Structures are given as structure tokens and as C-alpha cells.
Image (cartoon, rainbow, N blue to C red; front, side, top):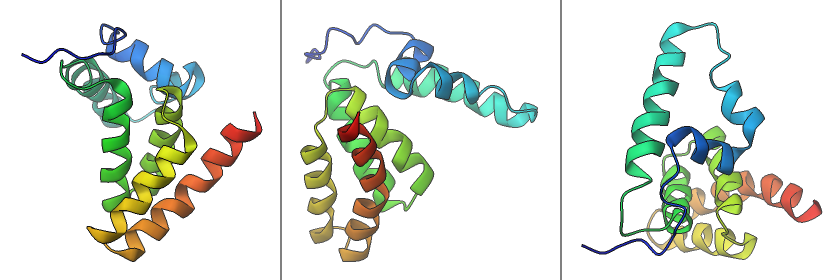
Length: 130
């Protein structure tokens, strides 16, 4: 079995979400009054970030690039912006995010690439300004 080169791959789902999105953003997901929404967030934290993101073979950095590309293709603006922030926290450079989104135009079309770049732009600008 291929082991991940990322030694951080032992974080709990909650720890990983906090690392990627910040404590405030991660905890904010559980402050909704809707119990169904909170249940989805709990499942997401435990299964997606706790199990899937911690599998061996890919680093958090690589998983972030894949996720950014998929969310752009799905036109999931809010989740894309959130995961661009997470990718930056996982060591992906702004240029790598731009290139990943640029690369989509040949496989998913120009509108997808352009919309992805537009949605990532503000998160990257905030990151570069900090």
C-alpha cells in the first residue's frame, strides 16, 4: 500500500477542518439551528475529513487540488471558495490553484475554468494580502 507523504494525516476530522478552514469557520458549521443540517455537518466531519481525507496515498495538499478542481466542475461556488482557503492552508500555492483551474478548460470547458478562476480570485487575494 502506498503511504502518504503527509505526516499530518493522523488528524481527526474536526482537527483537519479547523486546520483548513480556521476554528471559527469550522465551528460555525455546527451553530445552525437546523438539526438536519447539523447532522450532515457531523457526518461530513467524521466521514469525509476523518476517514476519506486521512486515507494513505495522497497528501492533504493533493486532495485539496483534486477537490478544488471537482468543485469548480460542479459549479459549487461557496464550497469552492471554502476549499480554496483550505488548499492554501494545506500548502497549495496561489499559482498552483490558478493552474489547476486553468487546466480545467480543456476537460470541462472554458466557462467552468473561467468561473472557477473568478470564484477563487477573492480568496487568493485575501491570502496574498495577509
